[in-house]
Length: 392
Ligand code: SF4
Ligand code: SF4
Image 1: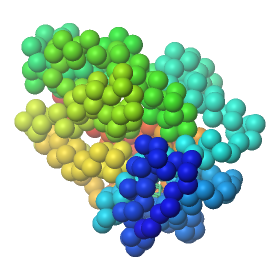
Image 2: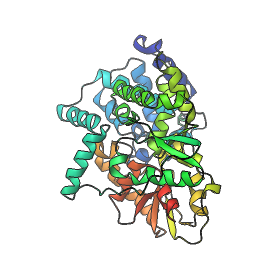
Image 3: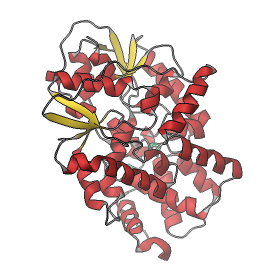
Image 4: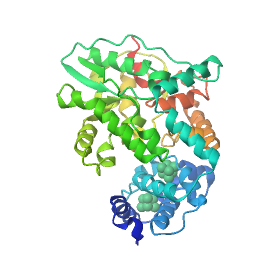
């Protein structure tokens, strides 16, 4: 694609990156066929090719309108389009750059500004989120917390760092504890660092991009002593939505001379849990029932990890049920379910229809956001896959 970026961005790092991405797109439209919002809304501007064009226009200096913002807001950042694209267009980075420009050049309505500010303040703050969750639980409008079983004391020479995260400790402390037990049985201790909270993804994707980077720097600071001392061999993340963000720290902080080297090292050490748990670590069992696996977009598209969790569940004795359109987003997408509730609800209903078609005993997933979102629409238990494998 030919481009002629405007003066305000052409020579900036973002401008150069966006230009390189845009030039790779040959406008073939293959990506459109796998875009959840295009399939739902049928508007070219609600598909990747249309959005790429909108970003191109705004970077070339066209007026930024609320319509541009709406179509970019409606994108789930699921990155199914990246998996489909034969030209290797990194749509996710392009839309982040485009959104940053749109946010700087438009002003949202007062109510929208207030709700986004509230989410950006409350969600990454574990204490605030926990308090709000407890109030919601008191009135029966929030999901119950699944308590954690015992976390084994660190006793092995081999150690890996876990990310506690922001909402996961309040909603499902059971997940990291289950990971710690499975790893402990395999001779690896899972430890958490003091103060290691939000990965920065929430604020970054709410378009508080600099505040999101501040969260990333804070997390690097919390992890760095253990990394620098060589105490841990990897950073293990049980929420694929956080994992995809931490794996991009090296890129997202590349312009920060104080943090870029640390960020690159942290990213290089980061693994999704399914990259660390091998089939040999899973106790074989026969017939634990049927499971439908929902592979989060951040796992299958963002991290390009496919088939690993399914193999581990099979080793643990679960029979998979077929899931149609497994590449499509469930509608959770971070704060998307709160900011675009109609589209999100329709995507969840379609996803649950696909997941429950084979009448599974349980649904397994790999991300806390998808887990809470899906559980809100079904009575079938939705669990992180490590909790199913941890069952003795
Ligand atoms: S992003 Fe890829 S698949 Fe989509 S129109 Fe461009 S080149 Fe084609
Ligand atoms: S990231 Fe997902 S919703 Fe956004 S354009 Fe790509 S496929 Fe569509």
